[in-house]
Length: 224
Image (cartoon, rainbow, N blue to C red; front, top):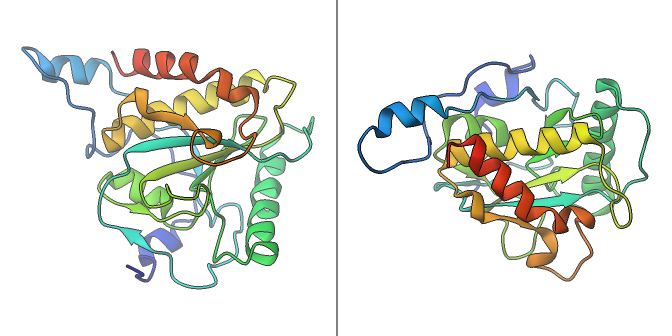
């Protein structure tokens, strides 16, 4: 359903830091479950919300799905591989993506939920996605993968990786993001996919070949 974006989500102008809210922790069965869960707790990575990178408001209210996502889908932007790894470039990139998605694609906002820059800086993509992630019970409907937009969190990794690997900073940030997102929503690390698993595309390039590594590393972060 379409609902107005919560005022709290719009007005939070600062970069969000620190430990996550408790909702959505990955469940572990058996004796000592609480102790193991606490030991494996994944801290929230720094994620700049839409207000921080000066996003345009959505053209119409975003749709909020009243259930948790069941997977993460990894993308690359297919933009040229910049050598500017700064935070300012990450914000410019987020604005470029939003302009493309709204002005060329005709979408109401950025299609992806989150964006990862080549310098490893994370930003919120579609409005309301960060608010939903921190609370761990709902998700914003995206526009990043046909057939999966109401059940998968989409993260765009800036650059094109058809024949080159991403910078280490981007990879490390992707791992941290996926671990935190799996924790918040109770998503198993085995449920991390690439765009090409669902649609006819080359996206996310060589990142797709590294999905087994990504799943293993995320599982280890979660204590699995």
